[in-house]
Image 1: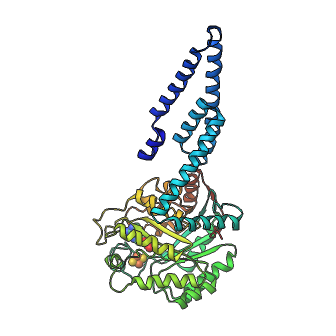
Image 2 (image 1 turned 180 degrees about the vertical axis):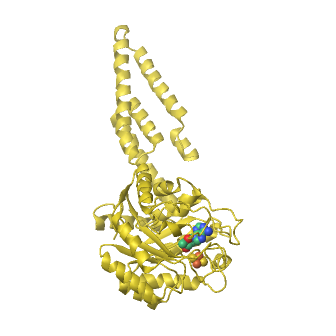
Image 3 (image 1 turned 30 degrees about the vertical axis):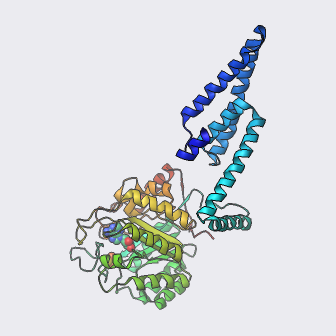
Length: 439
Ligand code: 5AD
Ligand code: FES
């Protein structure tokens, strides 16, 4: 009955187990009835305690296997019932026969659906991985890395339709940090334990290659033990090379969407998806730890777009992937569009953790804006990076990509403490480390 129910409904109901327990006890009672009057009760007591001890013993051992995900709860209850009723050796025989029948059944199913070859490939890849690593790797354990974000300019020559600091937003109050201010942010960050600085800005022509190279070199010389990340948009391969030679290690450039039509929906004519993808490939070729990514729930995004994003990311194999929910900005043409879903973002973080196990995944500020516990939930879903802001508080609010951005009023030191506690609250540890990608 259990096999039939498992096959038909993929479950073994508790009612069936209770029925089994009652039947097992009844059968002992009937057996005792045949015995001589004086030995009935002692025999029954002994038989019942055997029933109980065997059942509990299997449950205790099985709970350990269950916690490792090796056996389902219903299967465990069934095996315990069999052992209680029939004894250990009969149960082992039944299990062996069951395993053989199960293997034959699976084999015919794989052959019938043509997946045998593919499954064999997965299995051999898995075995090879275990043999070469000598262990099944858990890449980052419970460590969460922090990046100090320095938003150094909100001038931008682009006009992305979703972005609050786009060129045509005349209401944006523009600012640029001086070189001295940028270096001050790094100094402050270093003292707070940051070992990665992310220089992020709009595509601001004021910051020529020469200026960027100069700033990167100064940070590199002052903080040789820190990673330098740039996030300043689309540049020529030559420019990327110059920044790398100056000392930059990483580059963040979200692809925004891997679907051509969707890209057009989000960006004006002057920008192209082909160029964006080429930039990402150039960055990888130059040896940057490269970050791509997209907004979840951006206007016009369909499930097909998300599937294309995941396929693109799997092919590109970036070291970092930044995703966060789309949040409307009041001065853009998407002002009245709904925000992206937090749940879908969390789901996609988990999918990314599985398809790119080694990648560094930030629990983004947008996720923290869309849900007060968004970043904690992000970590639980598979993220392992947080990016608190090191920019001067006087300018924070002006880097307004979307409405209601959090952490715009707090000093970096406050953000640091706040994040440390948040990370700890979900069982992770915030570490002071460059946090390079696992090899
Ligand atoms: N909502 C959420 N994320 C946004 N970004 C830009 N505008 C928004 C918005 N309205 C993201 C983009 C960009 C990154 C710096 O911020 O993906 O690449
Ligand atoms: Fe340039 Fe958004 S349009 S940063």
